[in-house]
Length: 453
Figure (cartoon, rainbow, N blue to C red):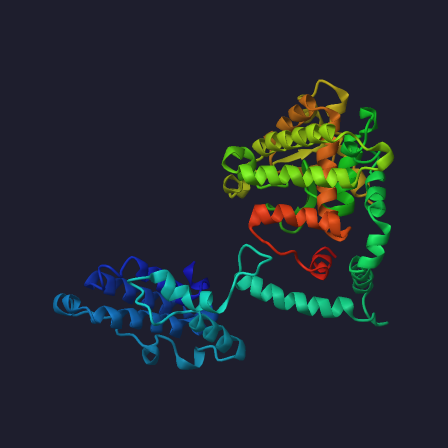
């Protein structure tokens, strides 16, 4: 219910529709009803008390501005007369902590009180924030979350760059080691692309096919590739397997299988004609990265790489069209579909006419749990959030060459790790982001290293 929202924001929203008509008797009654409701429910949330005076101030300011209108004064004698001294709360209930005081000042400082909200509501409510904050060149937006994030970044940087203490937890020590290796540009440039290509060669596919003159399709074990990519980097590729709280019974966890996530936004991929610049920049990003990772002795022709890139993007567009948009996933009951791994395998295999397009769900799940002491058999009940998606995915895999599938899934890994690689690979990423988001300056390496630890 609305008591959990900042009341200052509630007041602003309430008056958007009232400015033009000023405050008539019906609106006055509505406001009184709101205050009566707040009085009756004041025990629900003490936080609202820190926002309440600000909301009152905004309401009264609107009333004062409206009162200057002579026609308003002549036709309408009503004005919202509540003020801070007449709050329908006991004064000892008002939040007076340092945090509440700072929150109230923050909201007030973001207003532009020199503007009549009935003339320019957005400038009145947000003008103070806009005047005090510029969008950084490295970003396409800047909000309160970004402001808090920057503070957190600085604190994390201090922790990661400090010397490990004997009493530090093991995860903290491991993060410090990884971070310091990530920011060691001199060593990274000396090693070049070898660490990244070594990782790709360990996936069991014979490397990234797009970087090779010839590639044997029999090297693709799709189930094993899915296991490697999910287990090692928690990447949402064509399918995403995780352990989540059971929506029906919160006392237990359940293995959940969900649709994957394209790298580009779904909106761009299902309507590429509306985003020609972004699609072209994406293609150039993949092409440049693939050529950079191609060994000189086995480098494919550029024309062949371009063809592979084209096939990858076409595949990603088809993949995106299989996924359910987020607005259709708000009904959680729709996402609750319990089934055994045996029946799931039978269901998805019914869409496959060849062995290579079949997904061994028991092997996939066991691969993810390898080393945990858990053994999963075909009787295990799992939750499949997008049932029809898996069926359609198997059909898409069936009609797609193995090389395209391997190229695309491994591309998920490459683009995720490129931030920590050579400056050339990092620059290729930022060239794409310039077109995609409008950011024209690359992030300092330490920020990328901090984010990916």
